[in-house]
Image (tube, rainbow, N blue to C red; front, side, top):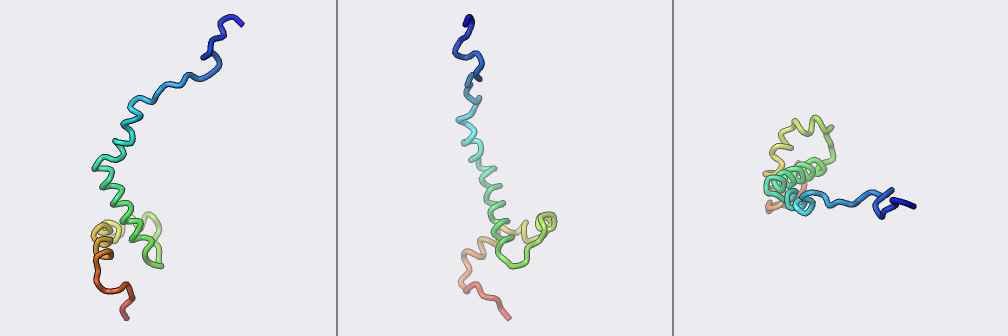
Length: 84
């Protein structure tokens, strides 16, 4: 075959520009703060028996105060029992 080179008919593999910086970018401080906020909101959401819909959960005050609430859950001295 005339003109059949090793790249003809196949996709040439090129490195992704800035590919090695992608992980560093995802671990930037502003994203880490966002990940911690999302994890604490998920922790507060799945903690109780009653779950709210996503739209209502995002508008609820418990989601916005979730980082503070998670810290209070972690460092409380009393056991986690309901009070009658």
